[in-house]
Length: 537
Image (tube, rainbow, N blue to C red; front, side):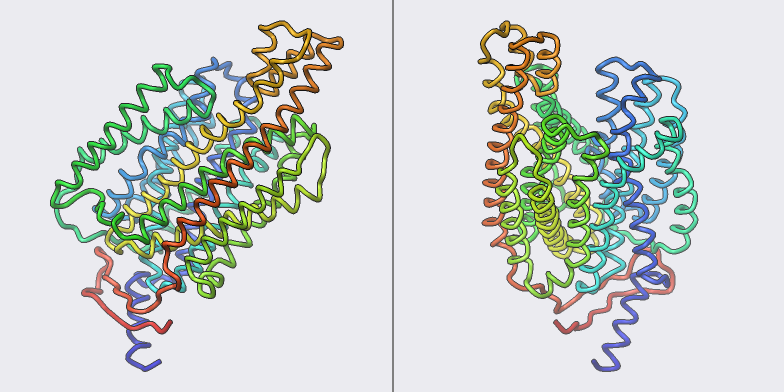
């Protein structure tokens, strides 16, 4: 490499990192992500303690659990594009502060209403943090090969956070009260705020045109309605119920109007022309399909382990841990795999590997098979993370640097929507395959049979109440029907994954590391202009 190119590379890194070591910046961003990922799952194990202390009603309990992901998903595009306009670091630091304040409010909530409000504020903070971490990462690592490694670390941390949440929550509940699951955020936020202000570079987009406030609110309201409706479907409510149908219809209408508004504006909030790029649109589609096919399986697998095999919550978490470890390994190896095989083969192979894991898990039956579960979960975690890594990296690299916040928000929104739709779709498949079994047991009253057909947990309650031969027969039939439903759901999921493998063939064959255009981040003093240099493949 010539001296000129070396100097240009050094200038590019100084510009992106604003004088800070970009790998230290990555550590700060990963800590941010870890907090958000942990908070998404840490409350799950604390629900019984919260219920005992605050005595929430059924609807209040649902909102305590669902408000955080619902608000976060709805506001991702709003804050992602706002960061492009006013500064990504500024939005990230505001998110830190709000996350810390909301955590304190949640920890000492005296009633369910205050806890729901605090969880909503946590969702706002999470929506400020999530797209900002990816967009700053895009800015700090202009070299695609280094950025691929950084995204691998970033995605591995996300996998760790999702797994650590329930384990951390369980540990804290063993020694403290339920509010401690929120208090752990505060010391980390107190450290992250000054460190982030000192080390993270400020950057914005091109700064042209006003920020479309009306469009941002339309996107937020539309996503809220769609995600809310999808979550209700995933919870087993009727698709024709007003509280499901109205939010879905209103949300879909608002999103259609949002798209029309963006197409007609000179300076759109989200440049929809990005979707016309085959790589960007295909990557987003792969993210949606991967989550749609798999997120429901995680919930169903947890029910299988606890209700069919009779494992405790801790034993269930330990059985699922290999999935997370494999996902971490795939994230850390992702950059090397991407350079060697290219996006097309990597993402398509990831889909196929995950489909093979899902088909393997159809061998699960009514008795425990630890070896099969270990093999299947390891294959599942590695394949899923390989797919998501390749799709995220391709999507982020395809988006213009000045629109990194909007692109990151689109990716995260696709993730959330895919997860919600997956729970609804696979949950419906599972219920359709499971319900006929308990309904056909001789000697069980019709009302009890209908109740048992709602879920395996309810079937166990009904069988215990009935007792005698009818109760035993109902319990056995429900377990067998659940395993049958699990097999059907796994096969449907495998089919969706194979569709994803075909779609991924539209991605580039090789990882393009040629011409790199590096704009100077706005707001960084002492660096101006645009530096272009050739990076050898």
